[in-house]
Image (cartoon, rainbow, N blue to C red; front, top):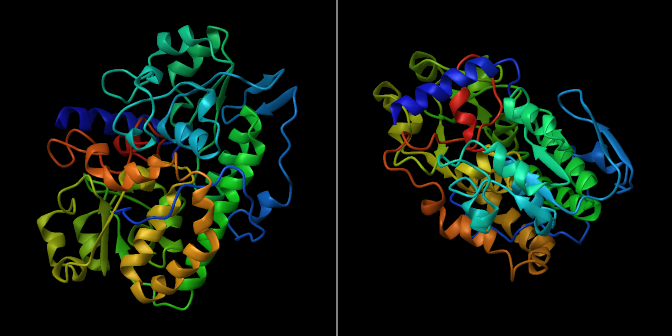
Length: 391
């Protein structure tokens, strides 16, 4: 569906000013009730202040609006897949009264009755949200300038729009805010701590390793540059991001000539593609000639939530297998038991690993579903609209 792709790209241009593995074998989902003592640089600042869920609560959101909650919400609608992921991972899924249900959230195994998206599984249906009369609506930054937010607010609903997540710190901050807003502070802290534990283990494992150059093509010539959380995903996993090395800021288009000149050692791409989404010229790079590819779960790579950790682990495992082997044992020893607190119900993770093909299946690689993103995501520089759909 080339027209859909083009329309999405056009949308991105308008949003430019806002810009934001195979998981088989990945350990269990983040705990919602256990805490870790160690902190990594990614969220050390957040850890300095313990979360407290107190009401009335007054916060300024990403659009500059003051959002007020008189009491703890009992009913929450998550407009974007990343909002839903965070709700599940902090243990607040029982409060969800609406969310997108489709290929971008299939790994969450949510009830179809919760679906508030249109037939595309991308756009929230305003009437669906209003009819549910939620206490609060959570909206990823992708909708910061969207009419949907204005319509919901005009209907009297309380809507909190998150700021753009351009780093893992930003991801952790939005987890913290979600917990504070919906009354799941312990679950939010536990989720951040879970991320920190695993990230610290990976960072330590790859610290002394060589850092090969990696290219993450999102299709259509787009790739993340500096100032994106995907850039930090790549660097945390122990590789250098070709987009950033080539001087790209935010999400944007990069020429084949630049990719060839940079000559990546690895190509990392979403598993919804049958093969790396690159042009024939790029097939002459070191990465392609040596078949040094890493496939990652599209949703984990594009949705700014706790499960970005699994994308990082998948990349580190493929690029630095020896270092990861030692880290894997530590991950199992240090954090593996946490999964047991939710493992009986954490088919969300198993589904992400075992049913990946179903979750991100496309009729033609890159046509029905834009690899890299999901429901409208936020934005970027001049042509990116489309990739931001998986968020």
